[in-house]
Image 1 (cartoon, helix red, strand yellow):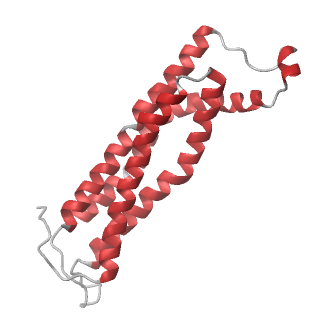
Image 2 (image 1 turned 90 degrees about the horizontal axis):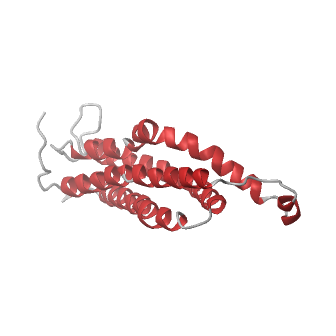
Image 3 (image 1 turned 90 degrees about the vertical axis):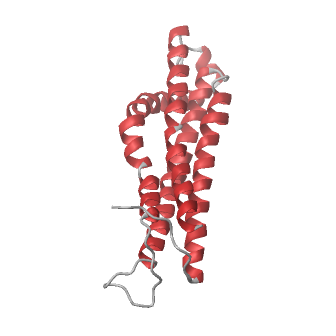
Length: 192
């Protein structure tokens, strides 16, 4: 299979909109995910352990609600562009012709954050999520409850281990913005 850059073709406004949306969404998701690793994780590592774990847990749940959906939306837009510009006997003859498979490659890069997450990040997530949940539960205790011994008291070793897990998560998370950035770059090459 050879990969070629699109020759200039006349495309509809819907296709142009899908091209713009696919690049924008994949680039925005890459930037957001990169910001989490480079700015947010670095900041919360300076927090007390219980606060750091609560903040990480909240960020994790917020990110889980946004980034997979953004990756799927960008992949769907890349896929739409590919199928709307590929000459296929199953599609109407009014569609423009594209000789490039690059939109499919960009879609695959967007979707690859899912297996990357399961393969690379899941073990760390499984260690951090219970700690974050425990920290959330500890936050519900009053000062009197804590004075009476309720809640988690972290040893220096536990604090260090928790910080290492959050730091590792931040480093592993860098793979996702790399994949999403690659998708945006491939999309730009395909559509220019």
